[in-house]
Length: 571
Image 1 (cartoon, one colour):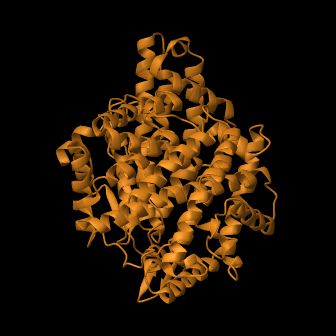
Image 2 (cartoon, rainbow, N blue to C red; image 1 turned 90 degrees about the horizontal axis):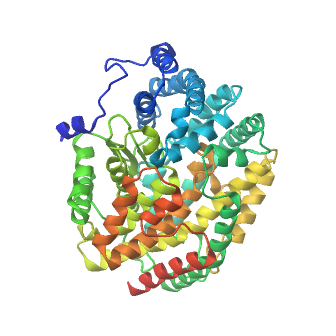
Image 3 (cartoon, rainbow, N blue to C red; image 1 turned 30 degrees about the vertical axis):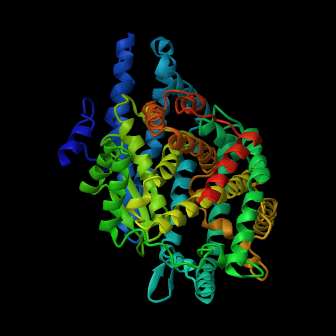
């Protein structure tokens, strides 16, 4: 498999294969060469773009490896310093030079003549150039450094319950059939989070203030409006987000109320509490999809191979070459991600496995991203492979549901398989209101950048209540915990406004899964058709290639939510 890795890697034609990036001075000559490059034909324009893309691939991969190593070991100050050096000393200079290269392209008649697959890149470049302000360069670098504080803080959160446990490992006990165990561990987790409540509130307040300044420097009233432009959201507006919030609020909580009522009855409880929401409603022991990491990898690869042999080969490539870190441990950053590596053309998967069904959901999700990265690797420019999240998450969330039809590798017992599918599908519906809540909260945060902590907490509670389903958990006496439950959402800190995409993609994934159940071969053809496009078409066009709609209407949301609910009832 290592030979496949070498075959996948982009061959350098412009950047020296011996380049070692220690400082900006190591990189500067390449930007100077590009700035002086003569563009006098369409062919030379394409050569220029290819050279620039190669440099971008090298730089982005160097920064990515620094980030990967830092998140794998947050306690290692040398790794953190290496990442911060790139962010604070190298990346700001790259930003300035990249803006100059954008200007060079936009001023060229040969660039303006490019069409077809270049159309999306051109509009993004025009947007970047319009937003660029040199006074924002150091501010953006400061924010990028501040964003890492969340991972530094949360990676050190542990509890002492039957030995030291990360919060991810501790969450396993919330599935315990003994209610006293669940309550004990739940309170230990929340009390540990509360120890850093002020630090995380302060961190967010500082970032909101700096992000607001960046937005004002670029001529915007607030960071939300600036962020929509910087994220190049050409295909939908903030009003579409509001429509999504409304549709979810109307369509999904009634279904969740039915789940809550059934859960309450099965558990024999007069009232549900927060620690009653993850345990199996039939009070069966937690599902055990794998025994150890080796077993986890083998079963996941077998699952993907059964869907399509090529998909299994993609994951085998990552496994054979160490392109993932799967286990939870103290000092490792929380969460999970798939990091595209544009020069290697093989991505890196990061997650925190603790032996639960959620781990299966996470790895098949990140595996979907990985396949997307590999399928789109042959696109000639980084710009074509740099996916918007609405597209990237469609691949990953679709794979969660498609792979579910092959989970017998994890659950040989038919009843366990049904339990796993039901839990997954309930999770699909549960996450939609949460996505809407988090997104609506962020709109408020940045529309009101000078708000107090008390106002922040009050608004969070208000939004939670708007999406509340009947017979849900009773938070009496736990208001001090509920008011800061937003702090568990990494996106609010590190990638503001990057979360609504999951909601759009979740709707798309349900539609893709519906296709797969009706005609697996045709669905996989659509799946690969949209992935191969990378980002060379608009989002609606890409969804159309997948054979689905890019829609936020109440009617569409209700249709898909009802489909999932009916599938659950069939289990």
